[in-house]
Image: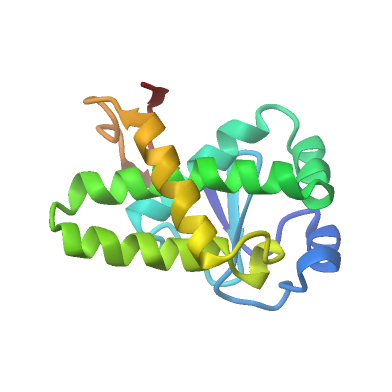
Length: 164
C-alpha cells in the first residue's frame, strides 16, 4: 500500500457525511493508497495497516464505487468495518499474548467502531459483541503477516483471514 500525506480524491463526499476533513488522526484508504493529514509509513502501527489493507482488498479495482456505497449504506459500512476491525484485532492478539491487554485493545477498537467517526452505527457494547462474534467466526492462517514491511512510501502486508 502506498502512503500519501494529504487527503483522498473523494474527501468532499467523505467530509459531507462525517465532517472529518481537518482531523489529523483520521486515515483513509482509497484504492492502493493510504491518505491522512499526518500519515507516514512509520507512524501507523502494524495492526492499523492490517485494518487498512482489508479496506484496500474490499475496494478491489473500483474504490469510487465502494466509497459511494460506504458513505450511503450504513449496514454496508458497518459490515466493512467489522471485517477490518476483526482483522486488526486478530493481528493484535496474535502479537500480544496477554489476555488483559487483548481485552483493553478490544474495548479501544469497539469504542472506535461505535464512534461518531462512523456515524454512531452501534453502541460500544454492540460493537464488542459484533467483534467477538466475528473473531470466533474467523481465524488467522499461520503464514499471515510474514510479508510486512516498508520500502519508501510503500507498505506491504500479507493478510489471510479465512472463514473457519
